[in-house]
Image (cartoon, rainbow, N blue to C red):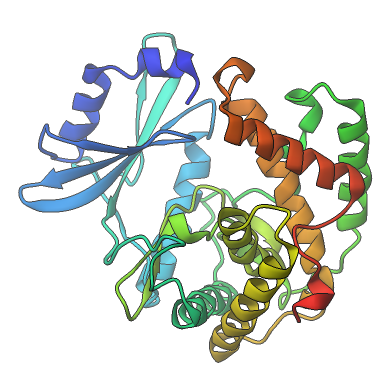
Amino acid sequence: MEKMIEKILTEEVLSYFSEKFQLRNDRKKLGDFENYVFEVYQDETPYILRLTHSSHRHEEELHSEVDWLNFLFNNGLRVPKAHLSIDGNLVESLIASDGSSFHASLFSKAEGKQVRFSDPEFSKKLFFKWGQMIGSMHRVTKKYTPEPNIKKRPNWDEDDLLDVGRYVQDKVVVDKVTEFLTELNKLPKNNDNFGLIHNDIHSGNFFYNGKNVEVFDFDDSCYLWFASDIAIPLYYSILGRFPKEKYKEKEAFAKTFLHAFIDGYKVENRLPADWDKNLPLFFRLRDITLYTVLHKKIMEEDRDEDVKSLIIELRERIVSGDSIVDVKNIL
């Protein structure tokens, strides 16, 4: 999180939201990259409190996020429920000392645990369940229409991370991104291949209890091609497990992952047309947004060697037009 935001997130701000959601004063910080995330308690029951600064999301965007989240929950999907405050609001807001705002929402804590790449549970059984969960989200969401008082989630091309030149002074990259986005925008859109998706279901955004996957963190949800939700799990699984030089190991894993994942997806939803043909496009799209967010959120003087190396790797692929794995070798 940017340093200026750290300074205005005071104990008074946290106490205000604790009162609004009737929480105990003890809390455990779980994350602070794009949002502040805390494990909190009502009596002895754990919940997740998320604080979002107005520089990241407007209040109306958060209302649209939790509206869709609760739609999925009410249709039987394994996602956390968003809870009302004592004032009957799913989103509470407070003006900070500098005139900006913090927005807060309270969620049920997901069941299970995070599965790390080195865990024995990170296996074909999980990949199947992962795909099955995403397939069910796509199927159910085809029936979702926001209420008139709820603003729709943004379209994919409204993401500020695609405005690369705002954060990166590199004309070669900016020109390549502009060219790529023009190409991507030519893809056909219909109810079976395009809609509201989570857009960030990597292994850090769900818990697994050995039987089921429960997805959380809907902060990046937007209207985008369904194939992106198929690409993202594989993208991050490769990125987290393999250095870019390990081509054979990477392709062997990607093939195992993708086949199990797709088998699970097909249990719940029909695969979108040309998903396999378009998979490399969504690998490249994630290269761009990841490249930009690393520049946006981590100042150059704060980047460790891993971050510097990743930025170099991402730039190389953006400029060359390559994708993280050669799809024709894994289908």
